[in-house]
Amino acid sequence: MLVWSKIISVNEKSFVEERFLSMAQTNAVIKRLSGSQKLQVEVYLENENEAQGLKKELGGKVNKLEYKNWANINASSNRPLIKIRDKILITDNSDSKELKKIKIRYPKKIVISIPAALAFGTGDHATTSTCLRMLVDIAKDHQKKKKQWSLCDIGLGTGILPITASLMGAFKVEGFDFDPEALVIAKRNMVINSIDDINIYEQDLFDWSPKRGKTWNVITANIFANVLNPNLKKIWSLVSQNGHLLLSGILKEHHDSILKNAKNNGLPIPELYCKGKWVSFKFNKC
Ligand SMILES: C[S@@+](CC[C@H](N)C(=O)[O-])C[C@H]1O[C@@H](n2cnc3c(N)ncnc32)[C@H](O)[C@@H]1O
Image 1 (spheres, rainbow, N blue to C red):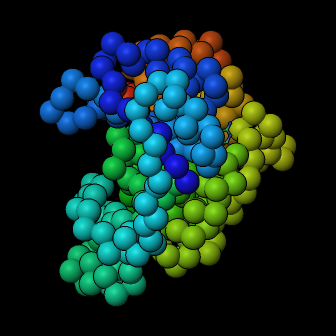
Image 2 (cartoon, helix red, strand yellow):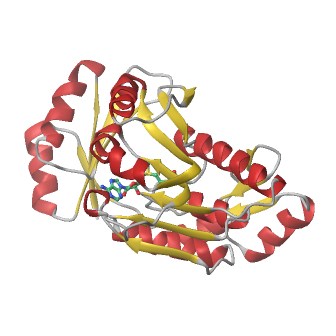
């Protein structure tokens, strides 16, 4: 694997974005250099000619990507634990001895291991952590009322939401993603967390049509508004009476479109949570 990289000024950002988005390239990353107004663009390529072609066209440099044993690195990571309410601790450590130590140190908490991987959802992103908080509150409420509950997660990424639901006592949990890589990672995370009762499958939300009459007490979807909006009516129809729909991953500038769409389709006014540039919604079905 090769990486072509170049330091660019902020003024060049839109040119670079257009250049690589128009190539439909998903292997490009643009990041701001800390303490500087400059940005670094990186494009990951298998092909030497393509990499050298970019260098010839735009300058910059081509390097071989250093091989790292991510499995070992993740297993011994020192990332601080992520706390969700007073109940959940998320670690990216997957070493069984280390996990045992964390569980002994925090006997009253549920410890969840989600190592960093090529799927979204390690718990430190605002959209995931807001969903997790809403989920923990719902789980506690069901525990208090001694009521069983089911969950379906749309776009499961690492599987962090269904794994949390299962460990918080949900009796029937499922989730799907259209990315086969996400399924591999979610299945691995189920094994790491000693869970075998989550039904996960490959599915595109746009083609999703569950059996007639099937509903879930909780549906979660941490996905962009342009994916949620065309599917909102369908998703809402699959939430049980007295159930909840948790939406996250919506940029502030798109949250009006969700509210308008929700109103047009008879959804109630949601509870709204903002974190940075992200908005999350909790719709309660009466
Ligand atoms: C932002 S991640 C959320 C991951 C995790 N649920 C969380 O809350 O951290 C969105 C996930 O949705 C998946 N996704 C996007 N569009 C989808 C679609 N049309 N059908 C199914 N999955 C989709 C992506 O592959 C990605 O894994």
